[in-house]
Amino acid sequence: MNFLKEIQITNDLQIVQLFNLKYIEKVNDVKNQTSINLVNNNERLDNAIFNTYELRQENRLYRARNQDLELLNSRLQLHILQLERDFKKMKDDISKTDTFFNDFGL
Image (cartoon, rainbow, N blue to C red):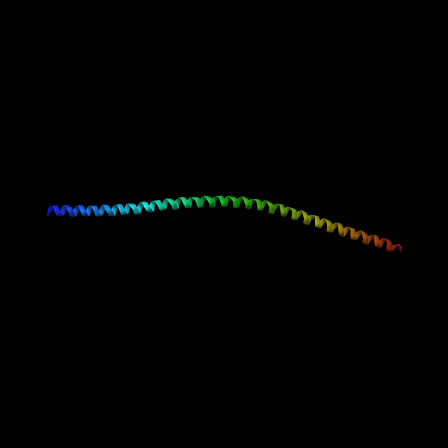
């Protein structure tokens, strides 16, 4: 009877070892997949960081261009105001000249 008990214990031990091996296999599969996912996520993160850097550089460039255009717009508005003032002055001068000539009947 002891012999049968030993065989049963040996069989039970082999079953436990088999389950342990299957469990270790699954754990290793999960570890490998996790490593692959980690590498993929790191690559995506690197790409996102690089793209963010590029977008920030592009944004700085557009902001600088926008500031240049705003400055140009301000200068053009000032020039228009000066032209309007000069035009009004010329119109007033012409009006005064007309009045002068009209006063003398010319």
